[in-house]
Image 1 (cartoon, rainbow, N blue to C red):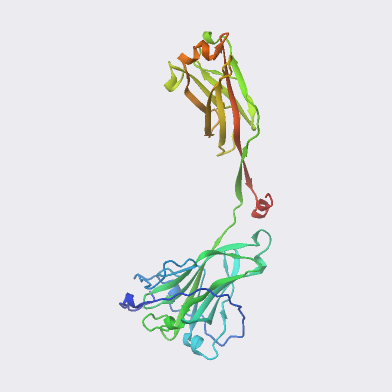
Image 2: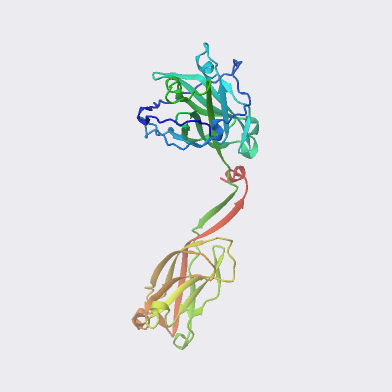
Length: 375
């Protein structure tokens, strides 16, 4: 643990003020000597605090940036600066300190600080930024999306003041740098009760970089609204049918095989009182793994006298072959056997299905660039 003794702090006295972001042109100049040599003593980048700290006065409505204290050290890079007051108070001050390159998400980055990076009516601010090495932004990786957090260690809290950029940033050849010009005010950074400068004039800054990889697997769901025309099926000698159910010959619609299925004596809630009618996704075919088939269609029992057909819509997803969709109680036996309805003529029943929309799904494993080229 970095601390030898923990102090009690008055949490209500901590105030962090926020201001809007300003665009800045960043210039690198020869640095004044700032010691960042290796040291065998424990540093805050390797410690975890145990006390919670609240930042009072923060604007919870900020859409671009949020700030809070956290015990966890930076996950991407950490820099301890000795002679920290030299960095801030020397006139003229150091324009910019940039770290050596480090790797995150397969890309090289640098983290840099501008001790007097921005001035507002609230005071002078330390600015913090990261830059991605543009030589890695080629081919499929020509764009990189990353979440950024900038941190500075407070010995008083044994935690890190963390500034979150709530917008994911897009790095590319024409924008290799992102960050915050208003990271921490000189007034707050120098405050004795916060101890951002501690133990022989040291300070510790860090950065989190979370790179989001591109997808390489995707699927396309297409809806086919081709007018295929109805598929009809006649069941002759209907009064002599004794099996539980009958199925039509298979037919192809929308690249899939289908069939009609009739229960003359009813099925499920229709058993003994109604004719049951379904459309089936034929089991003689194989769907792609995880493929689902969307169908919008109409099932009909045909009026063979006056064409006043009994029609019912179906709107469903088929998840497996052999699955069916339809109605247990499509038409009651009373209506079915009523000669005026015209459903059975010359002992023949005629049923029909008409597809209005049907889906197909294709799966791909290709690069984002290839994906975008399909549009």
